[in-house]
Image (spheres, each protein chain N blue to C red):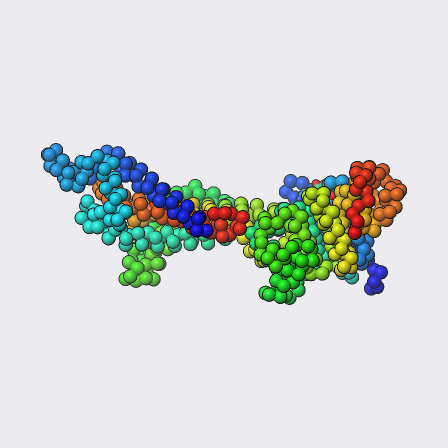
Length: 272
Length: 313
Ligand SMILES: Nc1ncnc2c1ncn2[C@@H]1O[C@H](COP(=O)(O)OP(=O)(O)O)[C@@H](O)[C@H]1O
Ligand SMILES: [Mg+2]
């Protein structure tokens, strides 16, 4: 494999969610590549299948449901879909990491934030005890938590939403993943905090050269963050283009409608 | 924490004061008193009965009787039994220890059975869930004393050589004593274990749906790490609460179970003393039982606050 091979190559991915109440075909055959170090945006209205696509790559099903996956997910020379669950656990958190939408509910409320970084380090890096804690403090520092050594012993409820999302980003980057999937990482945050979190993601991605899959329903978020955009609608990718082309000349009516919904001021996105 | 303990202690004192007052008045409101109960079928002259009441101080206004009892208790004097003329504490203490042992063993059995079946039911779902829930529903519908009586009957019928149905004092034969406690403790624990099981199941299911569990899986953590540090740690607070409340009811249940299994504990003692209107003994038992309940609930609150940093006890 060469450096120009995509780190992630998804072909004809389908996801059918089977729950007690219903069966939903949430993803109906999507194909895309993400190159090493590349950032790709996924944009589409709520319910179009962005999160299900992201979880399909990680092979995660929401509690109480079974997700039947089809097609192929090729990641760094391996086929993920046929992998055993144990092998998949070695990929999750270490090779592919994920940041979720709601920082208020994404941290375990009864253990300290430090312990929630320690546990993933112990799981994947072989660090433990003091060495793990030193790395945890370093990570909290890197994501911009002031006084990280003290804050590591605090509980999630002692942090603001923006600070919690920083903690979750620290967890995600803790094992140096090759691909970071950020699923609407700023949707639940105040506008000013949104910009800070996006800047942090941009900086970390550049420093570490990791690939980024940035999911959002808001075109304002992808500008300045990603090189290419996939527009999703109804479980399919309906338009794929470079970010410049999309803003200059969207071809799909649906893309035009999404772009029209973005307030003018935000169109230039966030400065690095 | 110091402030919490202070506030808690004042609460405890207020509750105990209230309980002792109410039980004092209720006992006196029952028809008949100790003198009539002691006289039994004998037809004594009213003057004789009056003289007996005067000797025992039962002719004083109720509020005065209560206050003098309270004053003595505050000095550590629980009085003497009307029936045996022995100091109440002297008689109560060994029986209290017997009931305490029974309750502790029952609480342990209930906790182990309840938490494990609740966990299995919530995590495995499917057939295991159905079996546990069916069993829980069945046990809940059957009163404690039915289970206790059935155990006594069945064991007596099929394993008459087993000594499990006779009470052995702990100091005589510690192992025999504990062996004899297991069946009654089991009968006592069954209903409570079902409540703990149902609550554990609900708590674990609720926590399973939380976002942070998905995050934990996305971290690639091992299933056992997720089970203990994410699911159980969070389900613990509701489990502690319901366990505290349920264990407090063990004392009431033990009256029935002690009678069925002929265990010389506080329950039997209470039953006998109510029958004979032995007021000082009744008052002491009520006070000790209430203190135990309040103490258990305080322990549960402290455990709750320790398990969840968000709770300011
Ligand atoms: N836990 C679930 N159970 C059943 N259906 C689900 C579940 N999660 C998502 N879906 C369905 O899958 C489709 C895509 O959802 P999702 O990927 O979450 O959308 P979004 O693009 O907003 O992230 C929706 O139609 C939704 O109803
Ligand atoms: Mg989503």
